Length: 179
Image 1 (tube, rainbow, N blue to C red):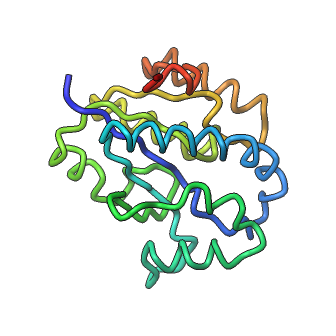
Image 2: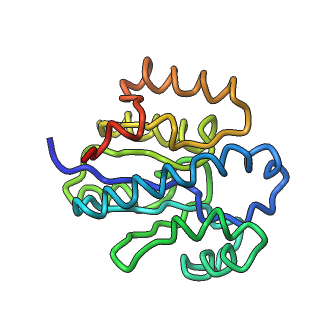
């Protein structure tokens, strides 16, 4: 087995979209968990890769996305998860972290074959990303307490699908890089 990378999905966010009110309570609960995962991954030199929606801003780059999110009313959900200078950043346009992005090439170049997926939305972007990772023969880990959802019942079903259909290891975040 090769290296593991922590993938942070869509957490650089202004929460200025139609489903934000459904998502924000769950996002509030996962931010400290993801922050802890980031700290533990960085202490162990695990690559951290942010894969983030571009929100239709085709001329934007990751710095602009971060600045806009930090300037908004929900900056408290972004600040604890701020990328560091060593973080990698991939901008995506659709649900999957792989769709029309250079992520698969980047993972290959980094020798990564195991992904720890965290972020939002469990029943959408996390699910589709797990499927796309599985069909690329990558191992997938999903810490259930580090993924935010809009609909708890759909998130539970998505986690079961990832575990059963994609052989993902669904666990608690405390099981990863424990002291």
